[in-house]
Structures are given as C-alpha cells and as structure tokens.
Image (spheres, rainbow over the protein chains, first blue to last red):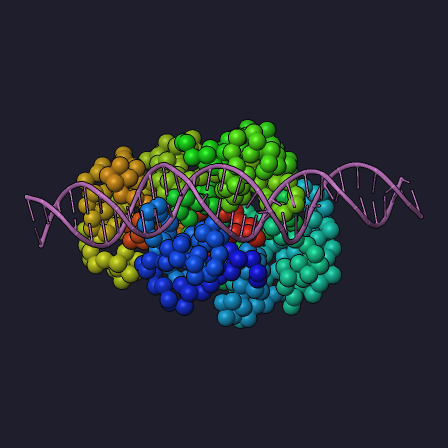
Amino acid sequence: MSIAYRQVAAEVRAAVEAGDYPPGARLPSESELARSYGVARGTVRQALATLASEGLVSTRRGARRLVLARQRLQGFNELRSFSEWARAMGERPGGRVVALVRREASPTEAEQLDTDRIYHLTRVRLLSGRPVMIERTAYPEHIGALVASMNAESESITQRLQELGVVFANAAHTLGAVVATAEDARLLDIRPRAPLLREWRRTTDPDGAALEWSEDRYVGEAVAFTVHNSVHQNTLIRGLT
Amino acid sequence: MSIAYRQVAAEVRAAVEAGDYPPGARLPSESELARSYGVARGTVRQALATLASEGLVSTRRGARRLVLARQRLQGFNELRSFSEWARAMGERPGGRVVALVRREASPTEAEQLDTDRIYHLTRVRLLSGRPVMIERTAYPEHIGALVASMNAESESITQRLQELGVVFANAAHTLGAVVATAEDARLLDIRPRAPLLREWRRTTDPDGAALEWSEDRYVGEAVAFTVHNSVHQNTLIRGLT
DNA sequence: GATCGACACCTGTCTAGACATGTACTAACG
DNA sequence: CGTTAGTACATGTCTAGACAGGTGTCGATC
C-alpha cells in the first residue's frame, strides 16, 4: 500500500488497536501527525476522516480528536464474503449447496437485477460445522454462469468472482426480523418459528449494474450487525416495510 | 446553511431526488460543477464524497460519477428521534410510558454507561396509534434527571434534551433478531413469540461519554434498517453474539 | 480557591495547483 | 465495418496556505 493517507490511517488504526491510544485518549494533533508522518496536513485529515467514518475517533472543532473505541473494523470484502469473515472470526467457513437453478426471475428479482432470467443459488453457510445462515442469491445470467462453473461447496464465490474480473463496488443491506419457515428450520437445524435476522443484500458494480440480489437469513441468536454513525455522517436508514 | 460544500451536496441531492438525474445517469464532472456553483474543485469533491457515503452516487477514477439510487436519506437526528422519523414517514408519533425508574445499573448498563446508578425508561412507541416499538433506555443520572422532568408521553425526549444543551455526536447500533417475550407481546399487541428486530443503541457525546444505552425492539414485520456501503467505505460490521 | 479573560492551539472550510492513473471517445487503419 | 491506438477528459492523491470558529490552558484578579 503506497497511498499516503491510507498508510497513515492504517498506522493510526493499528496504534489504537494495539492500545497505544485507549478509548478516551486524545490523539496527536493534525499538525503533529503531519510532522510525524512527513505528509501534508490535508493528507492527515483525509486519513482521520476515514477513521471517523469507521466510528474509531471523534471529531470536534477546536478540540483534539479522541479515541472512541478499540474495535476491529471490517472491510467491504470481508462483509461480502462469508468465508473471509468466518476466518477473521477464527472459525472455519463451510458451505452446503441446496440448489442452483437457472430460471425466470420473480417480479422482485427482475426489478432488483434488471433482467428476466437468473441463476438462483440456495446455500447453507456453516461456521466450524454449525449452520448459521441460509443465503438465497439471484445472479444475472452472466454472473450466474460463472457461479455455476464453480465448486460452491468449498470455494468462496465472492473471491472467485473477483479473480474472474467481476468488480463489486457498492451494496445496500436491509436488515429485518422474520420467523423461520419450516424449510429454514430444517436447513438450519433449529426449531420451527425461531426468529431469524434477514438481510436483503443488493450489490452493484461501479456503474451501478446489479450483480447480486440476495436474501440471507441468519440464526437470530448467532449473528448481529453493528453500524456506527455520527452527526457528521450517517449511512443507516430506518424504514417501514 | 452557508457552508459551501454542504450547500452543493444538498443541491445535487435535491436534483437527484427531483429526477433531474435518474439512476444510471452521469453527473456533471467535478470541473463543471465547480464552475456552475462558483466554488473550487476541492469543495465539489467534498460535497460528492458526502453523497457517495450516503450511497447516492458512485465514484471511479477516470469515469464520470453515476447516480446509483434515488432515495431519501436520513440524518443522524432523524435516526435518533422516533418522533422526527415518524413525521418524516408521514405518520403521527406517539409514546406511552410504561415505567421510569431510578435504580442501580445492571452489569451491562454499568459497563455501557460507566456509571452505577441510572434512570431507566420503558416506553412503547406508536405510529399513528399503532405500537411498533418498545424502547428500554438507560440514562446516566444527569441525563435521566432531565428526562424525568419531561412529559415523555407527548414530548420528543431527543429534541428536548438537545434544547437543554445535551450534545449527541456518535452512536453505535447493533441489530439482531429475537423472539418477543410475553411482556413484549402484551405491550406491542402482537402474538407471543413473534420475531422482533432488536436494536442495541449506544449514543455518546463528542468526548465519547455515554449518554444513552438502549434496547429497542421493533415489530419484525413493520420496520427494517438499511445500510449503504462501498468498497471505499464501510460502517457495517457483522459480528457473532 | 474560584472565576474570568486572553491567547495559543486545534479542527473545519476553502482555495489553487500539480501530477498520477483510469476511462471514454474519436480518428485512423486494415 | 471492426479494431486499435492515441488523446482528451475524468477522478484520485498530494501539497501549501489562508482564514474562521471552537476549545483548552494559563495567568491574573478577587
């Protein structure tokens, strides 16, 4: 990584995570950090803006920035890839394909993917042998064809697609609570009507073209999602369904 | 609002929402926007960075930015204030105080608020007469004393606290799925064991001092939360519980 | 010892420019 | 007509400086 502001952000983040700056501690000023790293103050500001958007540091005119929390953040790719996330959690990722079919899109799928024919994958994901999530993902045909050529049992689809040149750029995640259907319960090995955390997930490429439209259902007591926001920046939206 | 980059961001956002730039459309270039608004290119870039973090526009070196979606965003305060949110949704906000007690903090409350004694408020929130959420909020005593002096049935606690000088700056929201307890079901007028979307919510002031620690439980089929992220920026964290 | 005012320090905003890197478009050629 | 190369245009990164507005600290005063 040779981009200066990212390097500065990574080093400050590492220092926080290492305990050099515990929560509540004041960070060095922008000018001090600029001198330390041998970069311009604007470069430092860009690095600190990154950390603020992650919820790691506060920002307030006139006062030194403070460390808010010492916690591990997740990148876009770790969030998108169950396998990458599982490993980061110290668990063994697993997958069990229930079905992969090429069919006509439902109205919702057609609307979200802007296509009439799709590949639809149903897969159970496991953490160290324990089922925690069902992903039901619709892909446009050109992506689905690539998925169909993979061994989805053992491979990370996300990683493989990226290796094949598919560029994931943006995503929207919608989180809600639903009750497990009989099929959900059977696939996840939980009692019927247990609560599940449902994530609707739509991923697009840099041009805004949809690459995936997925409904993931997590065992309610196993997984939760956390979002940081601030008065300066918010990406969380509460909506009526 | 006289801050240039915020003004530019607001006007571009309004143009998108008005349909001047439908999803997929290319925005004017940074140089063109700089000329149009009579500001520096750096000012335009800051405005567009705001819109990108909201998931409204894409960003890619060498190519014009594209509009990703036409949707209404929410500010930090709208997200924090049920009343403000309800009105923005075209609904009438309501509240029914179940209990407000001053007591010792539980271990979790003590840990999250860094205090041994708290005020604890349980309130049912209604949208146009319909109960959709139970908020169970713990406040440190200095905040709780202010809350205790309010009419929490009809007032927006959030708004009133701000009027009283409390500054909310940062928050962390953790979303999971739980099953309604008997008490939940009674308060929300739903069947027992229905799924609820649970939001743990911790709000802090600019110094990182905790102001609220709340467990909100939403009727699963009524409310969902959406987060936008991108390869450049992510504030969503998937965690094990 | 408490309070207040001044000032130094800090972040936020804005400008201007230079340069690197990626993308899209156009013209030329086969 | 299709392909390719070149170039113009676009965004990303970095620098430097100026100025506005907020915060914290210190010294003086009561």
